Image (tube, rainbow, N blue to C red):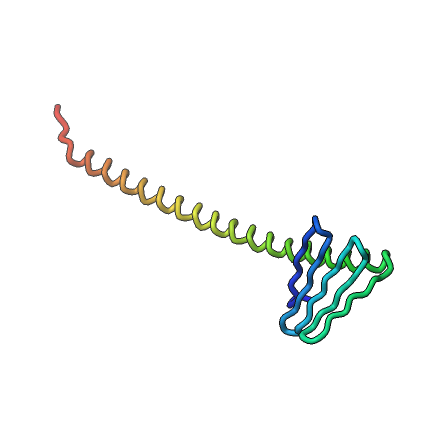
Length: 116
């Protein structure tokens, strides 16, 4: 199922599954309890028992949700890594600035003459 695309039209009550490798499309019409199977040559639509269609829809929704969690996790990991790199860069930059200031202060102290 991982190579199968899942698209949802919640308002229209339609769920679309397609797999280009296997050359099939499935359309689930949740309101009418109809499942349409289509391949490159044929298309068949059948009306099914309400409970069966609801079980199929539940499985499709769970898979869609699982995939979205994977995407969210991936995005969150990328953001965390980017934030960590930015944090490290800022720390390095601050350390470099502090060293420059210390060198300037040391230089100023050496250049000042002490008057007695």
